[in-house]
Image: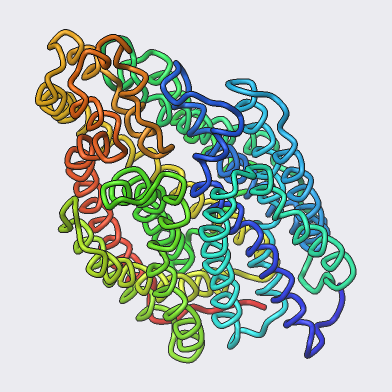
Length: 556
């Protein structure tokens, strides 16, 4: 173990910030550029099974990361945080290269992309499970909030770059570049981490890898995510799949596996999920708050992109070729709010404690969700921007103080596993949030969208029998069609039927604003309910943050 030098902390901060920046770009650039990616691999969103595969293109990274975070955190306590962090940079870079060379088309191309995204997720697990621990080792206690705050600002900055860069690349049609942009950062970061980072933390030499616990956690998370993903897909004559035996078995198996995981972690000699840390009130309250905050906001970004890219922007005359870039720009106020509050709260929490800032942050976030839930379908941009700014400001106030509070509450020999546990709660909340948001919106769409489609198409003088078939389109397919800039009516309505219509009616049906106008109001009803649930979760997170106590001790 090396001694900390006065300047080493800035080397650690800059390198871990680069890793966070790369991972953040990877997250948002994919969401915003999904239309050009799926066009590039020639995917029809209305084909059977496409909706679930689209979700797994996004979820593959997060599932792999969440399953492996705690194991890699424990391994880093044993074998060295810097060593495994270096490996993560290299694996992530390799995964990015593989994503860019996806060679197949259609469903085969989607499966390849999912597998390569999993490889990226393995690299991400090494990065995320060690970055906070490396920073906590490198910085003295009175500067950790500032360091973690700056690190998280890089994450938000990366999300900004990803949104704008994804929009720009989507406009060019060069979908492979969406993954290749990570490669130069990954190569530089891998070399720099190998050369500059040193092991300054305390190693654990008397521990073993908890293989049974790892398997139980992996089965539990994967089972629940499979259940949530396929629960929002059509099953039989139902618009959703919660009655599917596969979904029921997946959820039960996932829950039972997590119960086994908790039992195992309380029995084994060297647990990877150190349950005794939860006896530290600041640690348990901080992790619970982080989970609730992630659950409240995790699906927000994706739902906002659907809202803007698939509904609001087309209704305001923006072409589908330009909606990805414009959607990225329109969500920037949330980022500005985070950037405004993040460094300030990190600095002030080092001086005055984390409790007040984390609590107020989640209260402000709850207010922002309430305001978003009151917006109409055809909202004006500036109220929308102000609401996003409020949400971002609240999350910025919360994030770095909460992370510093969690990391400061544990002895130094447990920082690797504590960092992995915190990241696991964050990632699990993000993934579950996507399933929760989708479930709510799809449930509302299944009740309201058929009537909206029926009414809209009958007004265009289409035959009732044809309208009934189109109205039976699964709401999940409608939602993803809107996201991907795809008018399903051009494919679902038979050519002879369209040809028989008056020219004006045919032009209306095939226009870019007609389908968004049909789906807009039903979608907004569901999203408003989701925002109210996010408000409730944020309020509970605020209470949990307050209950962490006024201060926490630390053992160096």
